[in-house]
Every structure is written in C-alpha cells, then in structure tokens.
Image (cartoon, rainbow, N blue to C red):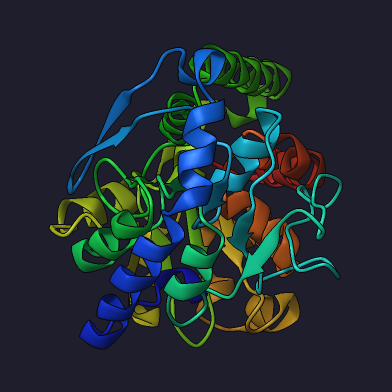
Length: 339
C-alpha cells in the first residue's frame, strides 16, 4: 500500500530548491515579520525535538503545510487551515480528501499536493510555508534537510510511522502555539475511548491481531497507532503478534508474514483488511478460513477503503468518525469470539 513507499530526492532538485527557497523568503516574509509582532510572537520561539535533531519555530505560523496522513486533521481541529496538504489517493472523497476532513476542506484555501511517488518540493516552496508539519510521515534525513530548507519542519520524534496520535496532536499544537488546546483535544478523545471501553466490556482482554491479507500479508505491530488505540479500548495483542514484535529489530510499523505463517498470529478477534481480494474470497480461502477467529465468528473483515483509512490514520478527527463506522462490527466479532 502507498504508505510504505520510499521517497528519494535528487541532488539537482535540492539545488533548485535552495534558489527557490531563498527567493521565497524575500519581501513577503519581511512584511509578515513586521506585522506579526505582539500576539503572533507570544510563546515563541519554540523548539521541538525530532529523530533528526531540533526544529525551532520563531513565531506563530500562519502559512501551514502538512505532510502525511494526520497532521492536517490536528490543524483543522485547532481551528486553522493549511495552505497545502497531501491529496488522498486511498479511499478519497470526490475532492481528494478523507471523509472526516471533507466538511472542513476548502479548495480555494488549500492546495492538494501529490505526494504519491515523491515530494513536490518546488510546489511546497511556492506555497511559502511558515512551517511544515510531518510528525508521523516516515521520510529520510535527506528529505528532512530539503524540507527544512523551505521552512522549519516538524518531523517524527522516534520510529517512522509510529508516532502515537497523542504525540502527533501535541507536536502540532506546540508548533502552532496552541499546546493547551491540543491537550484538550487529546483529553476529549481519551474520554471518548474510555467511554467506548466502558460500554463494550466484550473488548476487555480479548486478544487481537490487525492485518492486511491477500496477495501479500502484513501484520501491524504494537507500536502502530491503529493497534495502540485498540489496546486503549481494552483489547490485548495476540501472543503471536508480541512474538513477531521481538523480531522487529528495525521497529517497522508492520511486518510481512507468509501465508503459511498466518496461523501463528491467530487471535480471539482478527481485524482483516481485505480490500485487495474482497471479503468473500478471504472467507472462502482454505488457509484463512481455518483460523480460530474466522471459525468462531471473531473476524471483522473490511474492504471499504475509507473505513480502513480511518482506522489506519488515527487522529483527533478520524477517531470519532471511524468509531461510528466500526463499533457495531467490532462488537459483533468480539462477542462471537472464543478465548
């Protein structure tokens, strides 16, 4: 799937960007600096740590570019509008955004960026951002340096693609000078998750595996936000998933597993992304149908890409939307499963 695709930058493009960025930082930026004294500078500068070093933001950002799945959700939830954000290609709405961002997106204010194969550095620079928010996106250090040449870039603090939704929210909040508001958003979602756990005792201590099944098979690791939030709802990771995590020396958010080994990660409840083959083929397959979760009714097979995307891109906006979509099916699977 598209989220694991590596990006590369060329030396020639990096050189072009240096010139482009210098030009973009001219009179317009000086005028903003002159008119943004006072409240715009309150609480700034702020320095945020990431896996490549430190990022310092000197004043409250006005022109915000986001990269990755979730940063724009936090920006919207904090009452701001990005000038640029990625175009959604997996389960998009007609406008090319996620279902939970659809009501907030305004194409006259936000440019959608095609980030499918590589980052459009020149287009990002042309937007003259004050900050680039990418606290989850798993790019390399060369990409980080190129982005930082355009604007201060808030990158992921630990392993790529594994920043918790809470840390993503807090990083964006701090970058925008809205830490207290971000903390309130986190508390609101945590309260919602606690309510779900309380209303669904069938989730408590049921083992769970989340995987993508079809031509290739992937299992999502405990560090992945989609797994973390299920743990917060009461589920615990299947023993086979925990054993697989011990082999995860590179701290990947998912690991490939051969079809013959799928039984090793069997669980009380299996959330199976089957958009590649469809639910019927998945359930009819002799290997998948032999799993305990499938036999007991503990499988929750999903092929709707918007719902899969909502479960995968955990954020303060996606969580309420996706819970409405999945709780009936997830509750049915948990109630039917046998420990």
